[in-house]
Image (cartoon, rainbow over all chains, first blue to last red):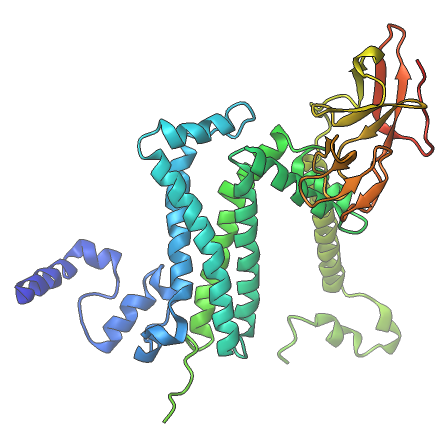
Length: 246
Length: 170
């Protein structure tokens, strides 16, 4: 069975269509395998070879990969939620309630989005603690740590902007408090709060601004930084794996 | 020389020492280019700031009609959550306090049983004159300008903070 499957797969890899898409062709030599990774737009961010020890559980606890997984869940569920949510003052809260009680599977998707968001914040911190206590931030990986700090910032901003969207009491007062914290910035605090809210109070403009940030600008920025983050893993010599103790 | 492309002026200026400070054509254009890029970047920044600052806002007027004086019994503190003010009918007359906590902007509440104004967010407490009793609030609650309109309503201007205590007697 296994042999026939492999033969079928090899036959597929030799077709003209496959070869136009995947330039590396059908061979299975080390060179072909390396090219299969290197010449794929998604895979070329990663190393063509990794130490098997780097794939073990203990060096990373897979925290970075788990964070990425929650991000994918958030993108998928977030796009689905956008089909029912209107970022307007009269409708936002009602839409959120409709998702909970009226829309088929709405409560499942909304809760999945919410819990994944909490999990992502937790996992980002766990990942950073793991990297810090392992010493994996040290040269030559110091720049990737900086990228990671920006990714932490993106995660927190995504979390904060998403918090307003249900437009309930918790959301309203959390953003009131948060925008007043921004107002405490020296010299330009008032202007920052005004730009953030699109006015002087948490209202329709603020809801729309947070919605655009949450659904477009911050996710795009996060994807860009994630791409650099992964590419840098390869450029900095792969995942940090301490020498095995003898 | 490998820097021919980057520093053409160096070779040209070398024979005549007096022409040291002359700028070569290429340097001139490079500076012009860099200068216009800087101007364009500054313009983009200004444009963005202007674009993202709304010029017209659909927000409530700072001047509100609080109500007729007889709506507020003597010696009471009344919160209007909609406009975020307290109308106080005290011994010396009427005055109005902003009800927005000076710490981080939460709406405070009057607690008659404690004879205090309390903020639910971070526990700041004020007396009925707006003076802070406890909590993180950095400022007292502001005294707002109050006057009696011609048709007998107590009016409050939320944008005008009084420096000294003023009372409206009816």
